[in-house]
Image (cartoon, rainbow, N blue to C red; front, side, top):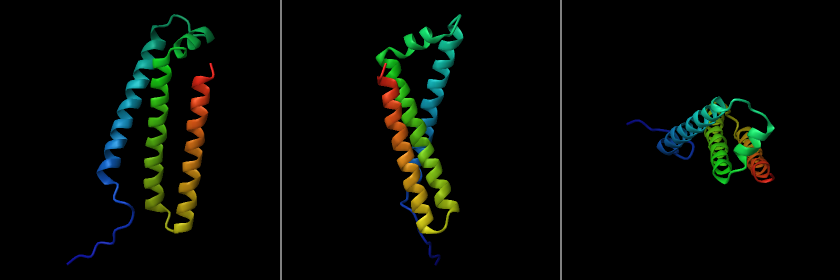
Length: 115
């Protein structure tokens, strides 16, 4: 009989699916933004302001950024769990990354809705 030593919280399938869904959403946003910019004859401040003045674009951008942040969290967490062995260092890195990502979310909301 093989004794498996299980560590972590068994994220597996859920995180695999989250990575795929967030990657697909980021790809759709990137293609949509690239398409919009390619169709503009001249991109200046007024073009950017007009693009991000609409509520749907702001919401789609926030959804994109939340996807980037969550995608990054899953990736960093997996790498840290695999390669950083001391539990205290691992915890410190996790806490630091979580705090930075939360600050990025707050900053993104401020930027998108200050206009």
